[in-house]
Image (tube, rainbow, N blue to C red; front, side):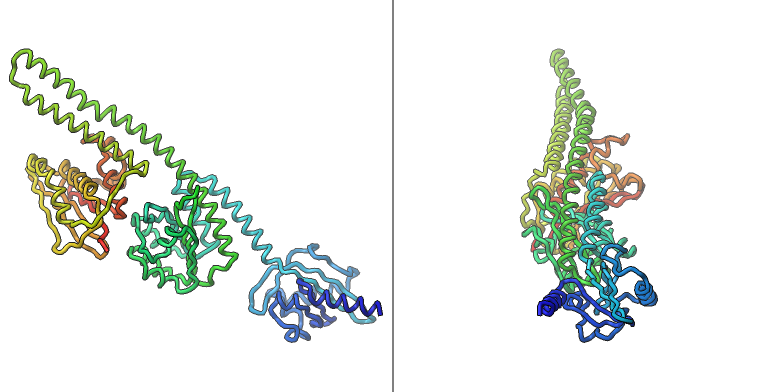
Length: 531
């Protein structure tokens, strides 16, 4: 009786064990298949009893497996414990392959042999170890990156293909986003996605997952029909084209949080299977690493920019302010001398002094605007505005400058323009900077056209001149601060275009310049239409 009780207890333990316990005869036919084996392999006991053990192995191992087991049966080794040999692979009823560890023993009864196998599914542990190694390697790579651009590119390349087929890494910019890096396993799609990164700041509609993250700072998972669902809530043409070409079935949007603030979003796209719980945990770990690395790089960028800005401002103040200050000193002495001698040249000298003072005031004002842009404190108060009155008002103050150079200024307003969201004062400053640049480089007798065009969600404002133009090698630098400070035809500090870019992007718009030497220049920017 005790032996019988012991036997029943052991049978119960074997039956409910989480590991797969499988017995087979000398012909390697399955004779026992516990509930653990049913859970791991997906087959029921009734389906596998009497079948050869090879059905549980990947195709590539089936031809040699029988000879390995037979050789073990002929050996003097009674058992091989788990972990003594390399990992093996099993295959589930679904066809999915998984990593496993196994122990095998042989029991001889008369002239028969029974093989008992204990198999453990280690795929979860293996996946965890691989992901931990990946995250450790990713952490080292990100920690060694310098500058936010390099970090963003590394994150995108780490995410593809480890987590997704495609990735767009967004930098937060106010109430919108700017694509900082993209990646896709298909080079053709990868090239198309790069156009999103060049599209400037995008303000997603309220129903878009990126807008939801702005509100909740929580991940958003689209489990099915992701392409159609994202496209129907998108407005940017490049973004829509990229989504159509990727055609993802599922998408995951992960907030990048640093020091309690949302600094970006990691967008992941898959054409096949959805993201499961393990994928989500893995992606969140990568997002945390990315947020930390990006935040550190942004801080480093800020420090570098501050040092560079300080050096540039010192250069501007020492050079550009020195000239008008010297003029004021010289002319004021001349006025005093004329007054002492009862001369009559004071009026002209006083006008020159006033002009030099205005030049200094304008430069100081520009430096203050740049300082506010750097600190994120440039206040922009947008309200529905008629673009016609906005542009007419902007050009009024520039008429004396145009007339002085005998340049024709032509305002061409499209009929029926919708209202736009604009801070009147800031946009007038932008138009003034763009037209002011055109005046500087357009010869006497030339022509400047200010033209508008409505295109769906935006109104495009273009300033077109027939001036000297800009060479191809200089065109990428036109929005850099102090760009003119390296030119021989210095006129001002070269802050106008940098300020215009900051103001336009603060409105959620885009700004760009097209030019060629001898063919003039077209500077364009967009304003969002009032919904």
